[in-house]
Image (tube, rainbow, N blue to C red; front, side, top):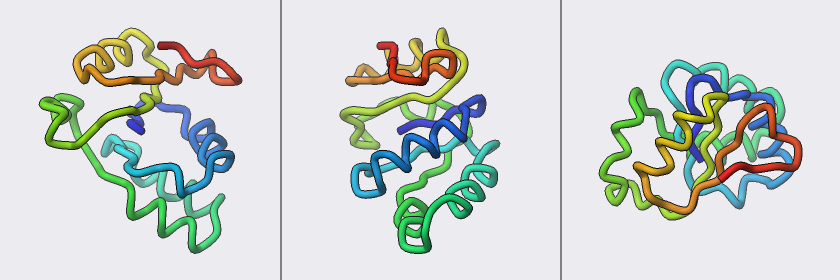
Length: 112
C-alpha cells in the first residue's frame, strides 16, 4: 500500500478497518502525511492493531525511491491518491499488479 501526500486518509482508515491488520505487509507513507496518518491509526484502532500497523509503516520522501522496485519486494499493491494521472504513471513505472484508489471513485470501485 502506497499513500501519497494527497491521499484521503479517512478513506484509508475505513479500508484498513474493513480488512484488518493481518492482510497488510507494508504501508509506504509519504513523509508529509506521516504524523496525521499515525494519529488516525492511533485514534481508530485498538492498542494491539495500532502497534501492528505501526510496524508495517515505512516512510518515503519521493516516489522515485521505489525504482528499482525489486529492492522493496513489491508484488501487488494499492496506490492511494487524488491525482489519478500521477498514480497511473507510478503504477506503470513500478510495473506490478496495482489497484489505484481514487477518492472520487472510492466507494466500491477501483481504477486500474
